[in-house]
Length: 492
Image (cartoon, rainbow, N blue to C red; front, top):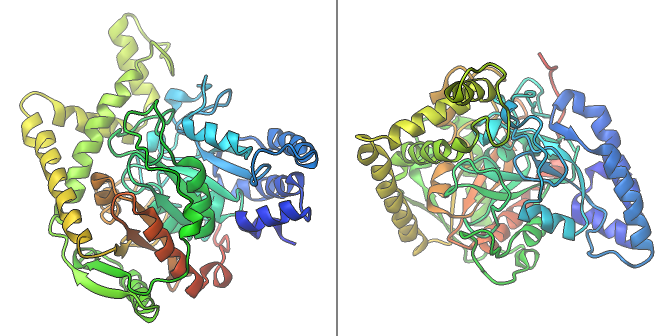
């Protein structure tokens, strides 16, 4: 039995039946990490040794009937901007290289309450700013389908670790597509929940009105299971919403008869790769065969979404990252004569190029004389984006778009051209602007064998609808049974 190929719900069944122990499962993953991590470079902090000790303890608890949940003893990977008490939380930045979180994020408390075993902290673009995981201070994570290509970002470590079977599932964060785009590039399932459904307490902030924690998994069932764990109201997060107790797994009915799918034509125009477009068209035909109604529609405001996103995101990043000053915590320069030197040199030496770029952009749009022209205008457009989505959801249950206009690109091919990198987010950012849920699932591969992702967008707190739509499609095409990462190429 190849344990690391199994989904979490399959692992859970074998754990419950006694066919596998927590130690068996954890050891299979730590062995896999020892074998493949040198190629994939997904971990910032590898906790394999500690995980094996925890697994032995969990087996004793399971044997004694003291396990807290059905998932007790299942391993998981955690993106490195989620605070983990007593474990480094670096945000893949020199600024936080040696920061040991003194408390757990709410999502980590929920993970620990389920007695999941943390295999390690996963690499990301520094402070979640980037779309390729090339902007990490520590390493460049690689795509297990082709090691010369990026895994996407900023949750590239999480997506590549799941795809490479280094972890059975993982947590990521999504500010403008940072769960969905790497999930698309790595051929896995990634969900960005409705804003407020999952607590942000203890998650290092990039853009507070856009950030959201979500699952990255092998299949849709696992995705629903992990959402069950991490969702829920948190009084420590003022943006957290009490949406009642829901079991998202029960929403997976393998039936989309009567589902109304809107297809915004703006996402299928100029700039989309022909092979991506072709696979999406095939997916639409499959939905029609399954009994859904498919109709082209217009999202007029889509052309303005990217500019709106980058103004708001950079403005909030500029404000949030002001706390890293070389005084309170984080990196402090050794080269200073006065307080101004500490501020200037700590930030100059501690932040990478992409973070500096976004801080400068954000400070500019918030500055006197430019605030009304840029930031205020962007917030007004944000309202229009929300209104446009509301109009569409009065007519459709789900919107279907590409997750990304292209498949994974070569490492180094866009890192010197920030604008080109930003354009890769064109299909995902509007979901964050409007606070909607969106899921990316694989819908096929291109001629080179690289995965292609399909995005399903739902109305606020419409996770059950998009999960079922994704699940029904997944059961039809059986992507995981037909395609698997081949670790092509070699790290250059």
